[in-house]
Amino acid sequence: MKKVKVQQLSVEKFHRYGSYAQMINPCADATGPKDAEIVFFRDMVQQTLSDSPSFSTCFMRPRPMVITVGEYHDFTCEVSMPLDNDALVWVAPAGAVTEVPVDDIEVFFVPKGTLLSLRPGVWHHAAFTPNDKDVNVMIVLPERCYATDCHVAEIPADKQVEIEF
Image 1 (cartoon, rainbow, N blue to C red):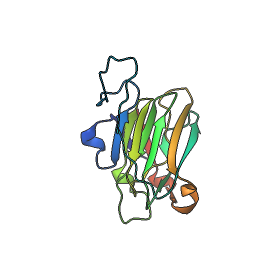
Image 2: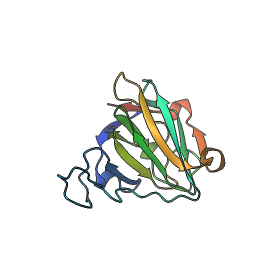
Image 3: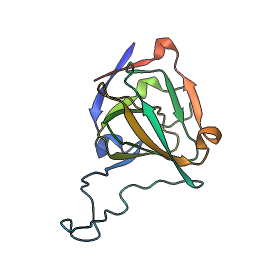
Image 4: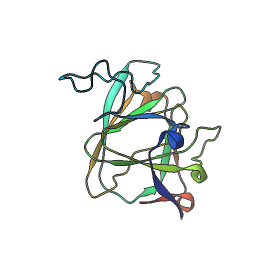
């Protein structure tokens, strides 16, 4: 079984898949002094949507760290944020393929409270928990996108990818 190592999230490594921002204790521009009683950090991550945004939660329990299925969306970005635990998120580049490009999979360690925005076409699927704790991940997509713009592909057993953490 092919193995892929988890890497730290960085702009240089992640930019081909989308963007991200640490939403808790951000290092971002604020509308006023950062030591004020109320501080608004503006425009940290953008998401292009074809319809009204829907906010959902994906709950994951600890499970074997093997990538067995992938998905992508043709017309929208998918935003996600681990809420109560860190997460391991895998991605692969968008392309004109109908099966998950397993040789191009990368896995990133995403600290809780970090918002990711995946570009249209980027392969991905449910996050993994890096420890023995459950994780709730907020997902933002256009309403019913999972039914109208979601391409899913199972990965054959002999091509599945194990995450090394």
